[in-house]
Length: 308
Ligand SMILES: O=P(O)(O)OC[C@H]1O[C@](O)(COP(=O)(O)O)[C@@H](O)[C@@H]1O
Image (cartoon, rainbow, N blue to C red; front, top):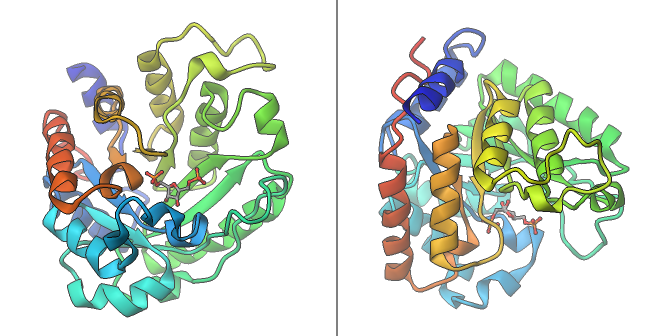
């Protein structure tokens, strides 16, 4: 609890090695928006590319990007993650009111996941031009296209370093090899993905919530009898100085999501990046749910992050 949080804060990103641009932008995200207490809640809205318009059917108003950016501002989010086309056409209406995370790559779900690779379609220079405070990159851990993905990520990391732009990696296990070992949200896959993002230079990593009971066909070291709390604790440790965000996934009951949020923050995560669970409902209901998530984040301030 306090010790564990303190330890993560101490291990968390500090000034050394970040450079002034990254540190300034991360401070803007973590200390000048949302709860301003070192935690973060991001609103992802790249689903129109990743899944197509079907994700908006539950609340048709959501298909309008302006609605979502307004929701991010009204809800006091620390950032909104969108693709370049929407950033260019919609973000400037709210420029600076909520930090922009520009997604640099993305794919559709029309082809199968067999050789999943998310191609680049925007650059770190675009992010600078659009006033972004971070860039997002989806890395498909375990896909047969992993080598190409690593090379692509290297280019993004180098540009991000040069421009002082924080790099958030969506570390998503994918492909047949992953499915054979328990699937994309097994403890094994999520834990490994968190470690890989840290090894490859992410400033923040976004992972699915890990499921210990799903791990199979891997070394015994992977405890299937871990509790959910033990699993997310281990994942935060694997991310080490890379700040960890837990992603939402398909819409579930609120209590299940709030429990996930509590366990993640207890483990020392920096925050949450929940999309469909926030916006697949009517506007005021979204804000009420966001307020409940913020009540949780408020209990886990991370005052030491970035101070050193
Ligand atoms: O697991 P999938 O289907 O690839 O989902 C990818 C989507 O999930 C996210 O990572 C998080 O959003 P959600 O909270 O709605 O799951 C989006 O950024 C992305 O579009």
